[in-house]
Length: 355
Image (tube, rainbow, N blue to C red; front, side, top):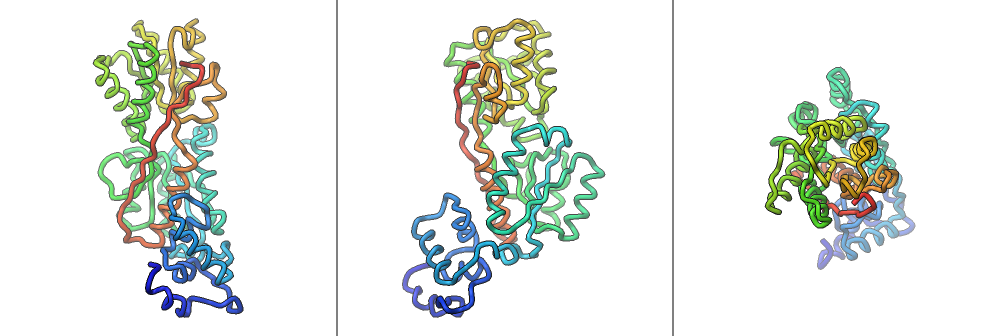
């Protein structure tokens, strides 16, 4: 750390004069600045969470050594492939139609591109694909893995933890698993949605929940139920239907709710894509939004602004979450024995015309 040892640090062989050879690695910059490698990578990527003092130390070290940022990849990752994998356990169709995944890729790319690290997209939609992927990972073709959209039955995260391969999750793990993750507070987000509907005077609030083998599906249903209970309202089983977070499943769930003949004047949908379907089905049944049914989604993806009417939704900052997830993985690659960490982002309600 900076302080009384500063002079000794600058006498270290790592410290170079302007006429000396350029620094080649983030490790060298970290040694000169007296900070960690992850702090250097955050400064290079202009990521929040670094103190002004530490940021100035890193910039001074870069200026002193003549460091070129795009040389970082080989030294930042211990196995030196200069690549990390982004593993998605979903079918091809959903990956390329859901804005969530595009935002994850954008956020991760913003971190790795300045470091000269390649992001490799890998799909694990069935057992055969998972077996092939596991073989690929075991042969060291990437230095670590970002897991996105994992289900409870997916064996890959648990296998990689057992084999001590660097990996992080984009959501809270379902069940006990010693793995770092980054997530949004879905329980709180669902609560924001239900409270908003209550504030709009709605008292019969239905929900289209997500899949219950995923943390997001579980947590958003839990937040819905807790918010109703806090308001002294019953959680009626006939007002709950389930989808898969994708297009098509939202329409089926909406039709199921309407077929039960149970009246409701508010609807919380656990993803924007499912909410788009729900809005279309409500129109087909001559139900007006928001006059007859007020609707709130979750994500604040591009789908929310494309909806008619524009969708009130709960925002999760997916790109910022992806950046944090990627930095967490780089930390884990640099130090596989570092403590397990979790970071949970707060949600935000975005009010539009559907309520």
